[in-house]
Image (cartoon, rainbow, N blue to C red; front, top):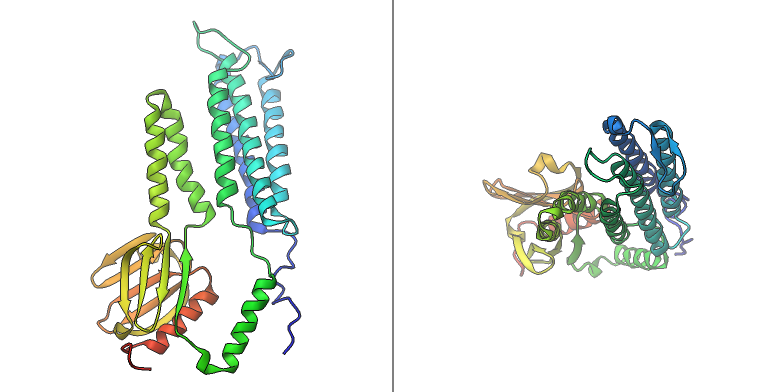
Length: 331
């Protein structure tokens, strides 16, 4: 049987829609934040504001417009290139990371100018507040690295997918090839990872004026939360087991205890939320809303585990349904 190398149009999309939305919306939000911050301290800038590069004073709205335009041009202009699926995945990661760094650095530069020239009475006024600029640019670079490392480009059809498809077709042609074993890794989506890191890094960076240890502790706690949401899910002829980071078993279900299983597209909050949850004979391990396998147990309990996609959830559900109620020595 010949295969043409494309599958339901996968790989033909020129743009990664989710990456493009992020690349466009985030700089717009930053630009809006700059306007909001500028008007909050408008009373401290009665004579206008000089651009960070110097020159004469501009009216505050004109200054903010220049800053907002620079943020959008750098952020959306560079970041949107990372949404092009024709580029290599590594280059797309780098482009989104650079776009994040540039737009945050531009935001910091204009924010430092506002704070430097709008210093309260008694404090020296400077064109740009160097301390704010230094802290903000450091954070901008860190966030660019975080985004580049956590962004997952939209998957495109490749030669390895052709190989997997050929194996699946061979397995369908030979039912005896079914092994009833499977394993995969689940982790928080890139947007969730970034949100967790932002919640830790932004307040921590602001509180470094009190103690630099606060930022370190906040980052460590954020990484701990992310690690607790990452796990390997394995199933064989005997049981299904969930191991946090592939090392620590936190949930195990015997195939004998399974009555039936089904793959669903779920909302995490409907099943208790993210992470490991155990209550009244039921248990869940969810890293995001989306594909999951829901198991009904013989004792009336329920187990729900995340899957990378619905195809994987279908495969896991099929294995569990074949093995439902069976001990390891029963075929």
